[in-house]
Length: 559
Image (tube, rainbow, N blue to C red; front, side):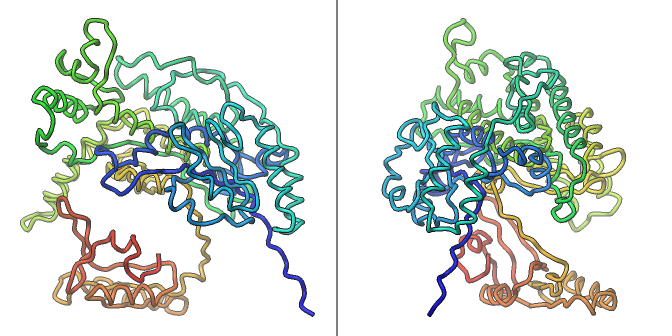
């Protein structure tokens, strides 16, 4: 007689989904590349920042270790922007019962009805109307009761032990105690991520109202960014090093955040369907965006001011900001919301940088051209690099340098700018600290990277085999660099590590090389390029590969 099959345990994590109803990449916004429907729901990302990451965070025991668990990565605030088609194509298994769909005010909840009804337990919908919980009725008590109802419906679908454990945890949820920050700052997009992290620590009433010093240069912004960042880092210091950090490396504790605009957006544009007057206003707004160097939009004269904010800005009438200006404001709001979600998820500090840092890209491009030119000399390259580094450093607020020295677990660059080269007391930032990077363009990729990514747990033994994919022709002057390095050091690692080289000249050979390897580390030894208005490519010996086609899974490579 066969033994009854054991039921799986439910997963205690809570996942938040924001439905995205747009189509392909061509529908993304022109300046930073966001999906328009997600752009209209940045407030939902802010809302998710205030919610628990799993069913244990709001228990008395969970509140005691809340900060330590988030800092160490023991819990992750999981949220995703997901297309309606992808969301409704799969019925959620009962082991993932705590899935919360956050519906926007302009989205029809009836679009989800068939998918919603296909489940054997209640799917949670937060919505303006018609949801499991409507936003206006939300409270921790209502959320708790709804989750308890889910657990009641899971009888016989998950292991009884895990179901009872979930009921016990959810039953004792309570609001975390509020704390007083001791000071207040002006509400502004630039400080929003820090306020989100402070709110996660339990601080309330930290804003006195709208930021007032908008016409006093960058320093007032810098001061409140520095002050709130130091408070976050001090709170982290109080937590100290806990046991989870011995097994899970903490995420970076400081983020350097600089939203950006596609460089090609400022290229010459045709008038298209716009009238002569409309096109002139468009160009003026475009130029004001290009010229921005601080935290605030600026205009150089009354004509440009009228183009950006409307005729009423001068005569005291109603303001009517230009659509391009409004669109950029929405892009900045969404990008900042994503940064705030990451900051609250990890309890990290965020230094929002003035836009001047993005204007250093031209100097970086000139340095690259100088470095690659045939007549380039070492002395010339050093001078050009020094000028580039000086420009980056001049665009970086000096007050923030001292804040960087407070980092204990590394710095994350959330920017397109080359901040790794920032001069920090005589050394580039990348040699001073552990530095990682998330680019901010294209916007949809930025959102995907900033939202939740499942961690990959690796051990030293996983690196027993390393694959080198060699795509260089033998006559290439750098083709033997890896060979020389391996020959020199192989005696030191040969008993522990096997380094395998696969030479690839075609797309098929590249696919075969990837699919023949199950390890965690692949080194690509070859060239790449990115031509204007075309996707980036990898150069193999005999052909080029569009890197985006690999990501779209059009080849057989493991992803």
